[in-house]
Length: 180
Image (cartoon, rainbow, N blue to C red; front, top):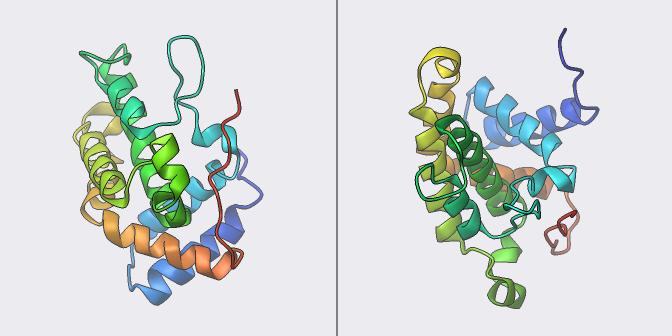
């Protein structure tokens, strides 16, 4: 049984295609589909903060997410859990950098330890690279996609910024609060 598509999927597919293919010349249907799906996922704020600490509270800070993903010193109980956390970190970094760039330069960033653009890029590229290294068995087919996302991370951020300009409000946005 196939999962039902998110109701916003056609809208985001078109917006991402317009920006990635039409404006950037990035003709990679797999990347376009992945980013559109990511926008659908993160249209629900509980998905943005789905990484939880040991007591079940959402982890909102990038450094804490990175620590949790460590299979040796963090809370990831297995390499599969590390992969899932790293995938989420890559997705989070891409989404925040592309859709909420003002969050990185604000006074709120200093108070709440929001990551800088450089920190998001490093974490996103590294995380997608690590996910791409899980290239055996059930992950073999999608590993090359994550390698391309890692290699073209900055370009994907720019593409999301163009998506935001096309579909978003003309005033600064704030990251949604976590849902406990």
